[in-house]
Length: 122
Image (cartoon, rainbow, N blue to C red):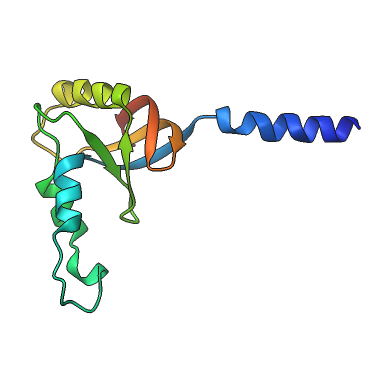
């Protein structure tokens, strides 16, 4: 009986643990637009995407309000409203002249992350 209790306790508490992701901080609206911009006649979806180009074109600016992080596999996730505010402050402090490779800590819910912290990746 005790082992079942502890198993349930461990499984029930695991979603509360924070996770970390590393990737490039981008303007979420720009990146989504670039992702939709494909040739409908091309044979392969991945052949039509230059993720490096998309990340460079969509790097965040001081006026950006919605942010996303794109990891090394090309997967992206949106930041929650408080994460967007933290990212906007981060961009203002760091500057918009370069690509921002960041580490985001928080909890992921489908394609959105509830952000606890954002920092430059090491």
